[in-house]
Length: 127
Image 1 (cartoon, helix red, strand yellow):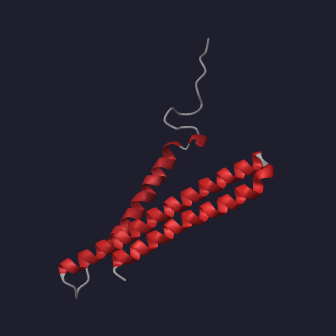
Image 2: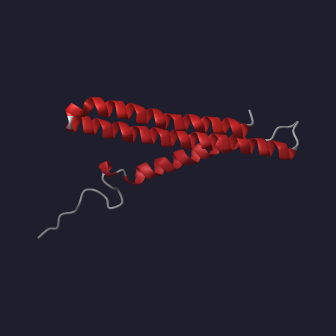
Image 3: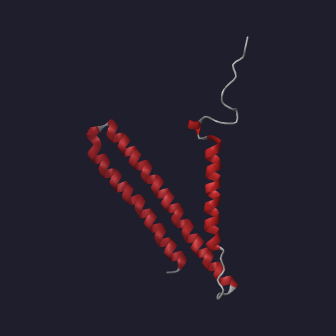
């Protein structure tokens, strides 16, 4: 009796699972992003004192990190709030009005936190 041989390789995961190639692409993209951020942050200007340029670059990097994390967290929170509101409105259409109002107020509060992060970034930069 002949044994059936699988047509796919053991090292290649199913395309719907994400798998090895998507991790590889994400790692390459992360590396490119880190190198593109590090190059301007570590660049040295000719006319400045060595210590002053490094401190200013650290301020810019800190402000960028604050804004990046705030934007990511705000977008993630807004997406979850809107998804939950849409799900609840779909399950109970009679409560769509109060759910919509509550969702809009919640999204406004989430967005205000991102604006506070922008103010903190301006304070870090000293402007």
